[in-house]
Image 1 (spheres, chains in turn cyan, green):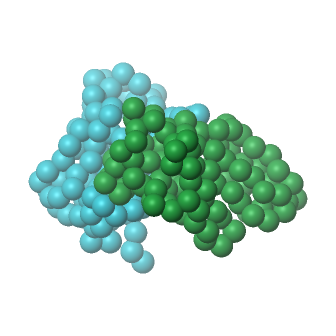
Image 2: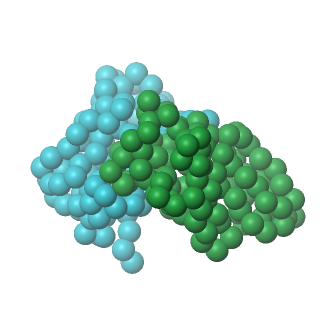
Length: 112
Length: 112
């Protein structure tokens, strides 16, 4: 089945640690996105990538980093500089910048 | 200019009722307005979307109404069922789907 796989489903981080969230898609989509979801708020865009080896900051990029070395993979690193990392992180992909976005089932990150 | 305001925050209806969720936007450059449905622990799923050149779009029991002059759009769910209980998000973007701006979400409960 084609889709977007996010792993792990739950992730715990100690203070001062970096942590990387995985996002893989087998839909052959060119564009990929990372969003953060907090209770009572909509999704906010962290980073997006329209092609391999290229990505742009979204609205809340501070404290996060990404890479896009392969078309199917778009990992997100939450660095120790992110002051409030506890959230539900969602990865999405689309056929291109002008196509609907489809989401994975998310990773819930918590701080120990 | 980038904000999308969604109301109500939560909504309870009886089975068979017609819940209505409203969204308002500010940026007149937005030209794509999707609605997403999200169940607990899952990623949002695209439900229905509209472009500003039409005033209404129906897909099954779901209808979007769009008022370009008022910069408002709404989701109606006909003959609502308990299985429709979920969180609904409206969104908007320029360039058809790229860099979506989300509303804060509406938690819908359909009582049987």
